[in-house]
Length: 498
Image (tube, rainbow, N blue to C red; front, side, top):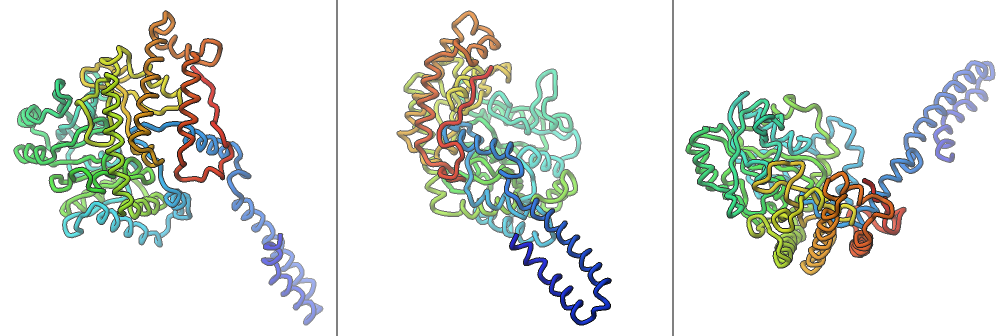
């Protein structure tokens, strides 16, 4: 109320002065000032409503956000493509930069500068577009920039660790929109070693004559031989697109080899190991600047999301530090320990181990169960993972694998010994899934899910595992928000639902 009085004070003083100096004008001036005051009151009231906090304006969304904080605190996030981001990044993301103005150009220029610095690139050779909204659009923008409709793309097959945005299709259906506009052909892993078969890739390239080869994956735990892919591409005069979405944080920290010396274009998301907001970047050789930028805008997008670009700039500044390098080293150590512990428990790890941030567990060959059932039990035990295809799978809906990664929990301060405990939790969850599947009701996935639903049929071992996981996870610090600011101090209880 005091601010409203202060804003009205000048009008009131003018009205008083007019009445004192010219009484005859009092009537008309009073009418004018009354109109002004009424209009100002209305505007001030509207402004006050727009400046109220979220909890007051929309308690429903505020409550859901608080519940999400509780979930993040009391669960183990093992999804390899997820991470937490800093409070500073979230502050920029929720700032007035969401209102686009010409003055936001310096924000974008700073982000571009930091992107090149973070990945140790010279602006004489490389440029970067930071406007792409996410990874799949970024890849599609590259295709439309460099290729003509129905040009050919060679990329890692989805069941062998590739990504949908690389042109996945089945023998009967084009799944990705990329495969609708371009002709895609997969290269695959050697199913005995679980690693990319570069000799077979070369034979396929010489026959298929692709215009572009994608060097990237979403579920591949080994280092990619970019130099070999460059050699293959040169034999067929093809572009090399390196999609480093999963590993960009590791590349920035220089704890794994860089793809930049061998690629024509590099894409990455920004929220995975890079630990930024959800967005994407396209790095390009200077000769491709016009094509790439036009493909982004006006080709496929409108105005830039400057709040995301500003938040990304903050994340890039944080990534260009010694602390970030140590974080990425710990990501690798933790993943190696997780892989070792799982192998000690006789789990089949695709490719036999890991060189990066993720492990792909073949639960079908290890325990005779599918990834969908294991994913469900893990979810109910407060462990977030995702089912994933493994070499030899014929169904993406009922795959034989579970993909897990270490970036998110490493951000919360987990070390190698902590991941040994995570492996033990995982093994208990798989055992519960195997037990439930072995019952008459659990033979079908619908019946299996019903057995996990609320009621007397809920397995007591699952309830106990959930309790232990929640207590363990809650003992680690949160990222992006302070625990003392949370509405829910303990575990947020989500019912066991079918």
